[in-house]
Image 1 (cartoon, rainbow, N blue to C red):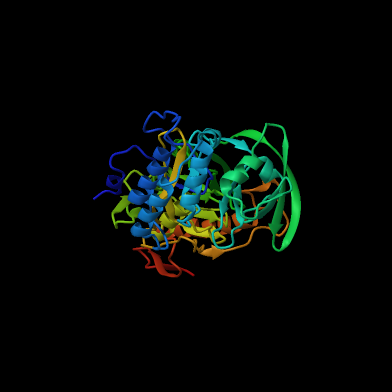
Image 2 (image 1 turned 45 degrees about the vertical axis):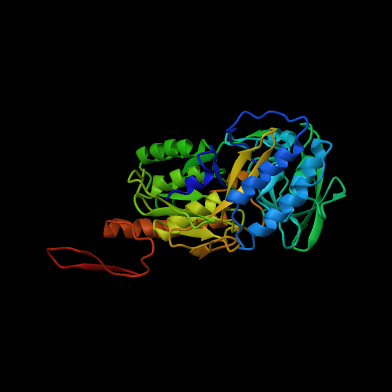
Length: 444
């Protein structure tokens, strides 16, 4: 049985992302309600009751039914009161990814599949245990990135307004503003607090960038970096790989560092560019309905592969990383990933507001649930102690890239001897035998 059946044929798009607000598509033409605000409240309640997956297993239908009675028994004189009630109702779920967006927020937060972002270039999540607002990752090339904001930085205040007890929607309202104006963030990092003044800008995000690096031995390495898994990412990736294959690169380094995620289908499609057969990812609904996505036999390359990951590699990035690792298609190099193994769908509500609701969790091909745990790389290496320039990312001045390239060279040389890619082979005792003289070459 397909997981899509739980959505009762409504048009929804599954998200594997940490973005705080993504517009996907309206499955109905929204109309603004002038009076019956309870209809919006009940719409949210129904979606949660039917589809919500609680990753901790604490959700009780009976309690949720009682909550409905309490909230529908009250009177609401305007939309603000109804929206506040919805947010209070959702707070009972203790799920930072199931969130309500009023119509204005729904339209403003166009960190969407078109790849357009308005703001300072950060994605945030609220840690339900510490109640902190945490930055998942700055997007490369944005004001936040240029100012040195890092993954897992905590936001203590926004324009001198404390974020203690503040929800994501209120934080976004404060961070957003007129283009060209500035917002001051108080950041906590490694026990030290400091301020950063960031300019608000409209940013066009190209999902995939690439180049060819040449090793000291003269090998050509295809370096590909995915910044975001939006609707364009798979096509961009396909075009990049076809171009690099024509140029006869010897192997690839796929950079997923500080990539906060995006569309689930995009991560599956991109995994299929590298994986011919085998499981890509499995999604599991709260009812135990499981859907498994596999390679479709149309991989664009079988050449050796290294994937760079770090603390900001989340969700869709972790799907690709898990697929590469578990299928023994390549090795992961860097730091442990963020650990977001939940899938959300975006729903348009009856008055034009929106809801992101957690509907499933995903498992790596080996059946591993990485939510909150992340994925440990095969080779753990820290980033440079001193910051490097943007243009130095993906070069030998980039410590994590340098380590990845060194490992890739070993795999390429081994592959040329054995005639096939075996990234997990630690010790090949006999790799090639010539018929005439019975010579044996061994690699350690």
